[in-house]
Image 1 (cartoon, rainbow, N blue to C red):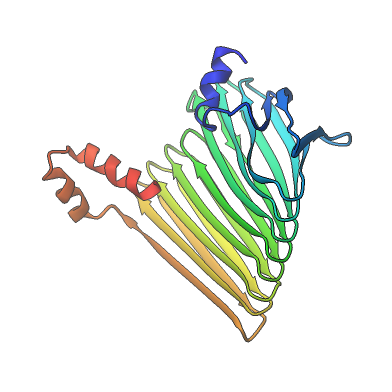
Image 2: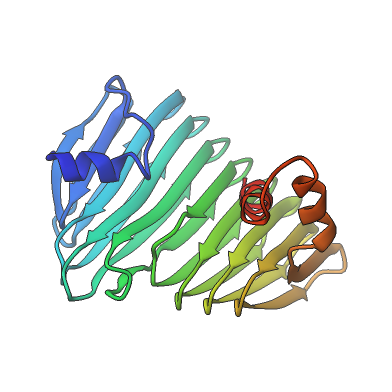
Length: 304
């Protein structure tokens, strides 16, 4: 990697531990890769992307799959499939960083599909970041599909830091018996940027459960739209919460939809949208912070 790529990488991935498996993709090509005894990474023959195969009973291994884009005018589409073996427990660190100093749109569309076998656990972290000329589009459109077999668990943390002009984020999941899915999404938009988030979760299994938490901050003339559709098709539990802070002319739309197709489905949706409370600012300013510093601290805590 060159110095630009190394600096970009720091924004979406902590330092990669060379003892674990990883695949680094830059400008539509895999530039570095490592496999281990328990994790294999194979390039697809019929599409752009990779298959990540985790052996049964793999415990506490990390897998890093960052994507970097530094070419202006590039549209990168990648399909990554994760096959998680029975009773495995792995950490997957993903994300995309774009640097666009040209005058043509750059875009990354990442389609990630997770297949969790019985009793497996996945901890998934995905971070998005962009920098460069603010009037030139840097777009990210992640699609995450999750298929969970009996007794599996997955938690997903998705963060969009700053600089992304447009994003459409789609997460779909189908849960079997005794499964649990936890998702935390945090998004910050500024300038004239737009962010759309769609969750579509089917709780098909008995005693399946899902918790979705979306925390967003919209400032300047940016717009965000959050839509969640949860289907309770069995004895199950789901809790969806959307919290948003507005500043300047920022706009946020929250559209909840919960569908109970079983008498034992317990589904809850909560949404709260508003500006930064004046008493929060005053409290921090009495500690010696300026108004801008106080706002930053509130936003930092909100998105933490």
